[in-house]
Length: 521
Image 1 (cartoon, rainbow, N blue to C red):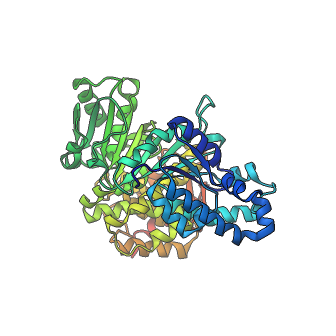
Image 2 (cartoon, rainbow, N blue to C red):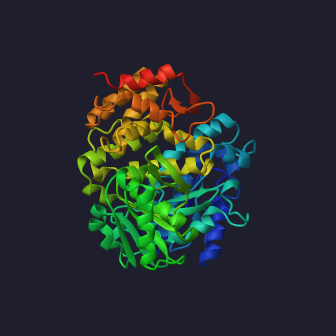
Image 3 (cartoon, rainbow, N blue to C red):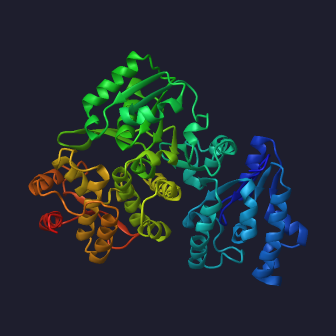
């Protein structure tokens, strides 16, 4: 970045870039510049009038020249760029020296704000939506920070928007390792920053004040706990799912108490999904609640479990039977930690990325389905995209009352396999991969199931259940699924990538057939 980077606001029509630039300028004591307003002053006509008189191609040519000039001359400040500026490769290159913030607005909200106006590119809703979909990958590719905007992102008192609350953390990016990206996660229960990048644990910074008390398993803690110094206390748990019990939670809570942790301190969850669930649960219950910073070090945690605030422990009767929602105060996903994972753990974590690609469809599905060999050094974009999808889903439905249930694709049967095998035969991701195959069989999507099986096999992941596991035990565990209602177990089904359906009741005979099919070669 330049010595004094500007904060550059990008985004689609209706994202509120001009207002945001003024807010940033007010909060930071810098000058705000709006490229569209500057364009209109320079040419003495509105952009609509210029479009009508000279056409879009001529407009883009002048827009590119103005934007690159602004970015080259900027010495700090806040700049709001026109929504289509990022179509220019020269503008995208010029953004490289600045802090680029994508104000991410959904299609319905954007149309509500600007639809059926005199804007030349907002005449028809269908075309408007298509244009946003076309530009979204470009916004993603250049953004250092992604901040959702819309009425739902107001603070509980209705006074401040996400960008105002995210601004202090956005400004941290200039001091963090190159290519660190930030997502601002927002849902009904609160908001928090998500940092994704390489070398974050060695950057000598921390997103939260107060004393830090680390909960980690003995393997991960020995590798990375020293990088979190100073630690006021460290709680070690045994590696693996068997540590995630009520007894394990009690041991951790008592160690925090003996170490003198107070409500002014916070928990650091250093490790994979098991540690994240357990430490988050302890943070929720310790003295009726203390903050937790999630520091995921496995692929499954970095793409999925570290976000959204689900915490919990297992009972012998079922996985995650005891838990609570406790949003993190921040997430620090240092992707360089993935290099320390055994190949089997990396592959198992990839299943969550595969699941997310199936749910998201589009570019993310194309990305994960095309990965021939897993290389931890090349997964940063996948981690970021999966984290973004998870945060978007949680923003819609934090408490799992509807849309968030899509994230359970493959998990209903997968959790039953884990329970039936005593959490010892399969890694979590391996069981979920088998669950995906069952879910796609129930979805009557044979070609997609065949492709997913091929992807799993390509990464040395199981596509058959160990015959030593009794299928009746799996079916019995399915009937105790914690999301079961009086009507029965609702499955997430998916006939094609990007189109999940939640709460689907399936005939017991079909469920049994889908499970038993996994025992056949």
